[in-house]
Length: 303
View 1 (tube, one colour):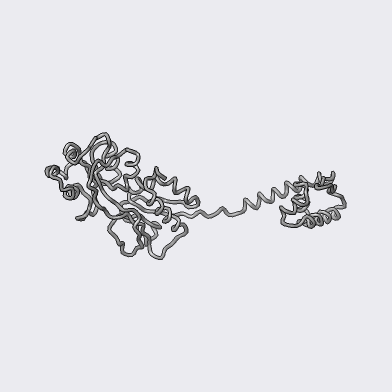
View 2 (cartoon, rainbow, N blue to C red; view 1 turned 90 degrees about the vertical axis):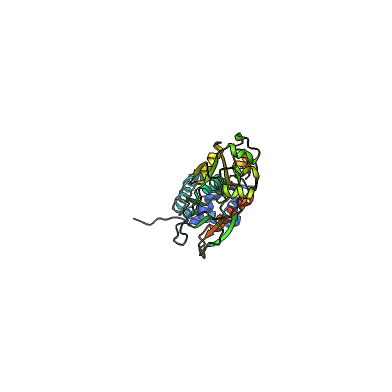
């Protein structure tokens, strides 16, 4: 097959741009060269094919009949080149992270804030690993985790994210006004896996409240849940009064689905952001910054 006898590509590009824009000056701006350079390239093309391509006019150029035939072929060809090259480009690699947290924290704190996360980190894909069993961060089963506890966590880097206080909350439909009203309502309990003397329970709350009218309150009776998010839903449904983390029900308190009818509030442990030391996958700093910002803002509906 005989070789193609084509003019220089630079001359063809200069002609196509000048013909499309009807201006040597604007063609030069598009190709980052001077109008004189465009003129020289066009003249070289004219000499190569032996035909005039432009009628030089004041402040503009007009295409000759030969240019009218050549221009659409070159325009479509350059468009096809651009589409082919763009199709070959490797799609940008998206960053992906796994964040582990308890079932209740995932459901009540993380999930309502996912719209904010997508807006703040559009190039980061987040996988939420919800489990009440601590995930092995050293084994790479998650890139980071949110953990509740006293801290520190041996072998992990940790920073406090959210302070916790626990107080009685219930549906406003129950119309609780004062602690003695607890005698007439069911107590809802969240079962802690590893309770300590400081674990926020109804027994500890009654002790800290120190109120005579609570002396006969049966703090062991009521409805029990192994998942704190289920206790929250039971409280919202009006099934009783729960002693809950005010951080986890902040959205429900803000919306009026729950109320805190009285105190006192018990101090709990913080929720911590934890990760394996020396491990900093791409996007982890952005995730940590977003979590910090959300913890500072408050309820999700206030964002």
